[in-house]
Length: 185
Image 1 (tube, one colour):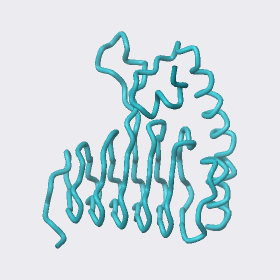
Image 2 (spheres, one colour):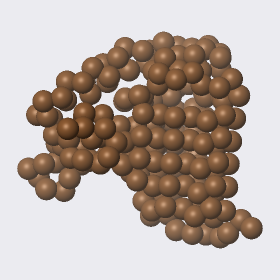
Image 3 (tube, one colour):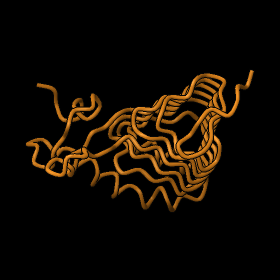
Image 4 (cartoon, one colour):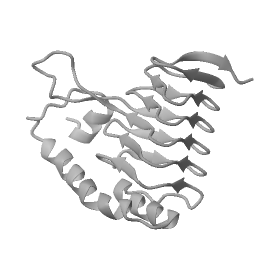
């Protein structure tokens, strides 16, 4: 049987009464305990160091993240080189979030990998799907990327957009729900 972390990342329904749910709670508690130091950081280097502690991987020195930065889990965030993440972003990463190299994330962007079933009897359970933001993509201010979405290479998501479907390479999308606006090349 797969452990709860594997099941989260493969999109299986995880109920609060799952016998392994305590393991999720342990990671969340650790992340909550480490977050105040992240938010109190006074330099980009310190933010990078504190976020590296939360995600369990050393972030490359070419990556810049501005605090505050919010995550409820942290363990399933992967950030490439030369990435820029602006102020007040929120990453809910139980399904996995990957930012490839040279990605730009505007302020107040939400990357949400977690969802709940529509059926009321299962609604408190979680369904997670990963988000992948490919190389050189740019996510505009206050955009929201929903579970399971892939943002293509060189793609641009306009400010305020809500993205519920994959975005092809070299494409600009915007609106609610996000729709293709134009091609870049």
